[in-house]
Length: 63
Image (cartoon, rainbow, N blue to C red; front, side, top):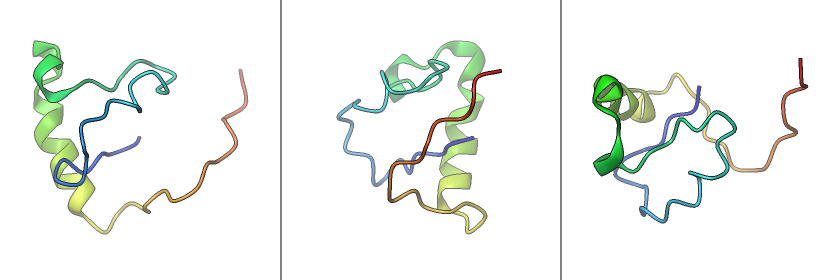
């Protein structure tokens, strides 16, 4: 799972078409059933649990 820091995001939406499962939305366009993830994303993005991605990685293998 990828978390996007809401304070560091510049709202360019460049990540939206790159998401292979179409799970990234601008905050104003999050479907109602997924709005609870907005708070979870903010909490996880600020935690030390996740590494910050600084370079492009190879995609996961297709199943």
